[in-house]
Image (cartoon, rainbow, N blue to C red; front, top):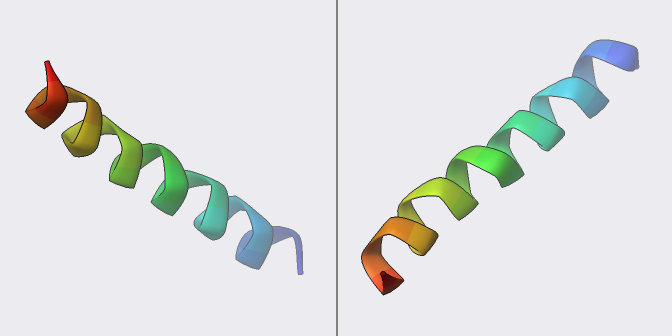
Length: 24
């Protein structure tokens, strides 16, 4: 369960990285 939550947190951060870079 801990590994699944960590994976979702990384997925959100990775998804925000490209979105913020594209918006800039």
